[in-house]
Length: 498
Image 1 (tube, rainbow, N blue to C red):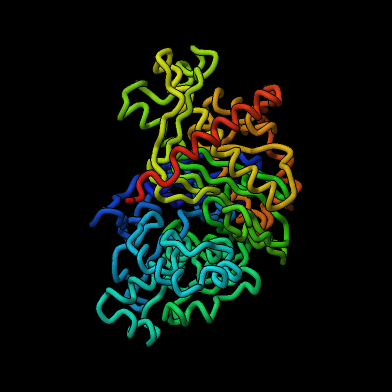
Image 2 (image 1 turned 180 degrees about the vertical axis):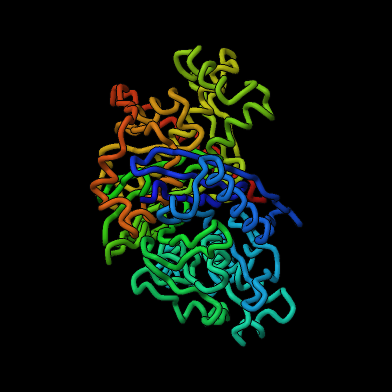
């Protein structure tokens, strides 16, 4: 009997492999960082071959850590940084250009041109997304425009496109399988989330040949098998989802209204909306959560640009703290923020405000404010921003989550978790295992091969969560949020030239 599911977690700055057992416990982990390239301001690239080699290396290392062989691995699941765009030669397997990373803003001007053509509403209706350089579509067009001969080669069927999971599956199967799952396809801005097909009108507008795109598939099914040369025997590859959707699945957010937030450098908050996509009227995007059991489930998503990065700012730029952990201690040395608010809009404001000209602001300062108050206000800013997105989700869906499930680095901070519960007036649930992204990929892969029976078994296996319950009086909560909203208005439009 196979003992493990292998989860490949292909992140933005590092690749990891985690082996999970049938109880959902981590049994082995290996991790390796890879190089980031910044050829121009606002441009971000990676070496797709390094992504592949480092992912393979950590997979082999994780197996070696526990002496596992191929027969011990029931299946491979993959979760990945989303939107990052790779184009490679179908015959040689070599990329034609460095991968263009999701953070890269090189196509912002072209996105503005698409908006000026009046395409915003039609793109949104089909893809669920706003037109933005964040997504894969305009990155792929850029490669076809700027790599000599690329468009002609693509039209002849010589080039393939994929996001990171597509690339890894193609490499693991020796070029036999060119697929993506519905969740990753829904982040390309080329995929109709209602028909589950690549959209011919968008492809025509961007002049992207249909033949270079992968086949869209459910998030849990057997796509193919990793070649024996990699792990000593064939292993089925049977689950994949973009990192934020995988985390939603890993938290067992299987019912409409269940939501999770990842507190990383920024924050990504997703709410399951069931089998019906909800079009946001409040600054969120609509995305596919996963395809499973012959059904597709959807989610609302809100992205916050600066969360954990604000704590790094306290440490590295202001030098108010020596470590991230110290922020919790200092925040609790004072009873409140002394009327001070920090709005960490260092690169503008994301959902639900969407103001690229907003900038960081500290307001309400008086002579009595000290570094503890500013540290506390900075930690509070993470919670206010998440509450803004939760409020938008409730307005769009008509559902208030019964609890907010959390992961990511800053979720280890008890002060932030309690403040989040207080400001959002819902319990915050922190699981004992915060590797929810990799766990989601493992769950999807394991379901496809019968390692786990069904979602109910998965939900039962998630034990040991810590719950933070609201304890702030409602009038005080409303007053604090009113102050935050006033502070945010001060940050709006700051960088726009008059």
